[in-house]
Length: 142
Image 1 (tube, helix red, strand yellow):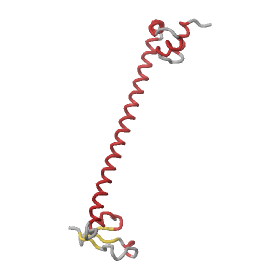
Image 2 (cartoon, rainbow, N blue to C red; image 1 turned 135 degrees about the horizontal axis):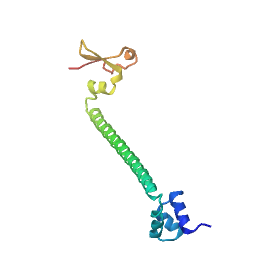
Image 3 (cartoon, helix red, strand yellow; image 1 turned 180 degrees about the vertical axis):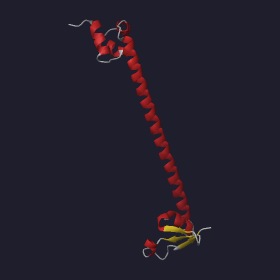
Image 4 (tube, helix red, strand yellow; image 1 turned 90 degrees about the vertical axis):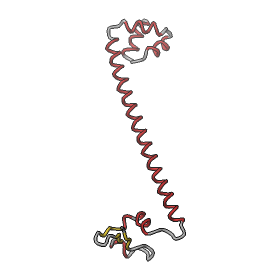
């Protein structure tokens, strides 16, 4: 049968428990556990190992925190941009005269190509037969 000293050393060095956890488990004072553990020759090596392990854990926590913070900020920027675009679109659509050609082109960039000679946007050939008569075929760009 193990005595208290052997139990304490086993729990600290093999099971990797903290001194407070050992004192609670064996119902002895923390000072008693500390005195026994510090008198063992393996203590300084174990202490350095635990310190290095905690340093690595802290480094990983900081990395996770920074990553999550940046991700949150990025989502906030995206949401702010989308809200501004929504407000702009609502404003343009609510005007009496309707949407202007430039706004339409900005919302449908994929269907237009720029002609450098005439300095205007034109509907791409693959869309010419598919677009409505109300869609501007040419948009002057100054």
